[in-house]
Length: 251
Image (cartoon, rainbow, N blue to C red; front, side, top):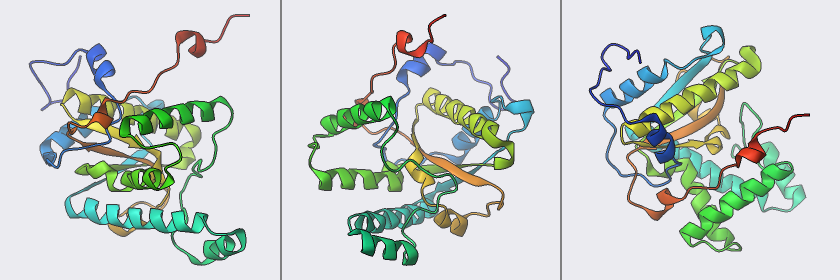
């Protein structure tokens, strides 16, 4: 394994252990992540492959006061948007024209039902998570309150936002996904936890307020990063596909 200068170590966790240990972390300690460690993780992740080495992505890193301000702004938009969605249709349409709380995402998020079997898997995962948390299926208030935690990054000390240049079309999204996977694996190896968050791609304007983002780059999603707390929610691991479901049969 070729390790970038400055990242040499005497011991690495076995890759199979990293894969088995990584999971979506939804409760974090308040401990800050040292800048040197964060730089190391990102530098190592830059070894990720991309289409013809085009590397069509950029990242905004929020921590400290910026992360707190962004979290407060995003959570406020979530709650105001949530109230609009409960309104009768005529009032909802009016609010859509006048409120800044509705999504302004660069890529249209899937806010309703997923198509086909993907909705079944989504529901099963959500119900499993709520069961661990002790949230009843019909307890909409508790579910909304937990959803809101997405926008304060589950109290993680670091939030990362991933942008791509859409001129690279679908390969930009593929390459960004590979980079994110590398980052999540590297973080796990360092004893850190992550949670990739599609919800953090719903609102763009708060990020433009805090970062100098090239206009051609579009927001894809975000990621919470920090040290995992000793919380039952971090033990949840949804069921993955079986090999028979994954592999296409031969003709």
